[in-house]
Length: 437
Ligand SMILES: Cc1cc2nc3c(=O)[nH]c(=O)nc-3n(C[C@H](O)[C@H](O)[C@H](O)COP(=O)(O)OP(=O)(O)OC[C@H]3O[C@@H](n4cnc5c(N)ncnc54)[C@H](O)[C@@H]3O)c2cc1C
Image 1 (cartoon, helix red, strand yellow):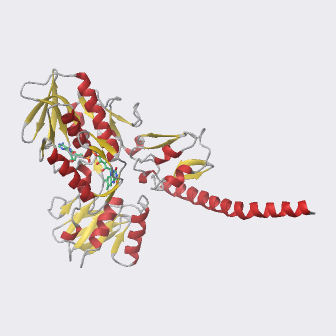
Image 2 (spheres, rainbow, N blue to C red; image 1 turned 90 degrees about the horizontal axis):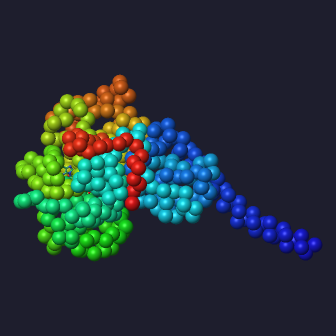
Image 3 (cartoon, rainbow, N blue to C red; image 1 turned 90 degrees about the vertical axis):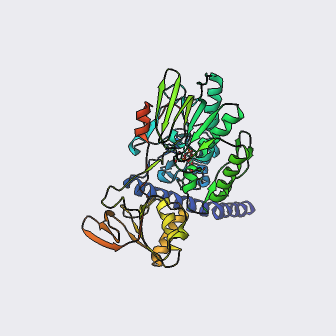
């Protein structure tokens, strides 16, 4: 009798613990399956950059990767880890770190995303000897990857001990984003002569993040400077830190030098910018993937009121503004603009809902739309822009003629493939042979 009673208590305890656990897991699985189906239909499963490759034969469906992913990229579908929203992946690789059976490795975007990845080998050297592909141009996102790739490339060129051309440099670096700046530090630390050519201002993609955006990064070792021990830092603080590093080590940077071609004759490279020619024995291409913002191709797009990035939302007050796009950059800009006094902000997005946003942005934009602080026109495209108006077409039939002071376009960026093709860098679509470090 006593043993039956003990057994009943034991079973009851198991039920109290196991049932809620099973119920929660079941709910997560159902939600993951729904998201998988929704995003599969919307064509949003394939990530555009570094992302997890899951070996289904090894995956035990423990969901450690699902729990650790801050971007909600993974879910358990059919008992195995599955990408349920690839467009949100920024390549942090936390999933690969926590997988207890090593079923996750990190790889590149799928060909159907139009990811043309330049060819490069383990030292980041392209098919052209002495010309290196580093940073986001290599198909791999994140600041820490940009830094580590720059160091690998410079280390390789040091090993090759190339002869510096008379009146030239050991290395010309194109692009002053995280990869280019890290490349400059590595060159200087190794006693190489170099110059960094930047078409815009220093900072790369970071310069164009929305104001006060929190940048998440892992601590990285910078040559000369030492360990950059930050994991969360605002955009402004990060830019100030870089400026400080540039001044302290007197890095050789030339801004507003858009590079138009790189030619190799014999062992010498000639990098041609709008202003000058620079000769060198090696070139680091650190031009990122956002070099040229994608245009809408509509009449009036060349008006000065049309912009492709928002830096200071505060500059725009009491204005009628159209934001084009539905990704995180578009939504963050729309939220920033809607917070300014007197602004009337409309978002035009070609899809029927926001489907690839960070959770916080998704929640906020929906709140703003409900509160009437932002107007969203889904299933729409811009047809024409005039000085005082913009014509937005919804579902191929309804035309909205909106009073308008500014248009901000966030339609993504185009791979600077023209420049790469001109240089002769081989591109490949899809999975490269070399995996990210
Ligand atoms: C909104 C947003 C948020 C992000 N958040 C994070 C985050 O929190 N943490 C993180 O680690 N990463 C984040 N990233 C990714 C990170 O910013 C990039 O991976 C990183 O900046 C890549 O560095 P890069 O030097 O390779 O390229 P970029 O930063 O893109 O720099 C390339 C530089 O090359 C210049 N250039 C291009 N073409 C030419 C030319 N022809 N001649 C001369 N110069 C040229 C460009 O003007 C630019 O300055 C984010 C990206 C975005 C867009």
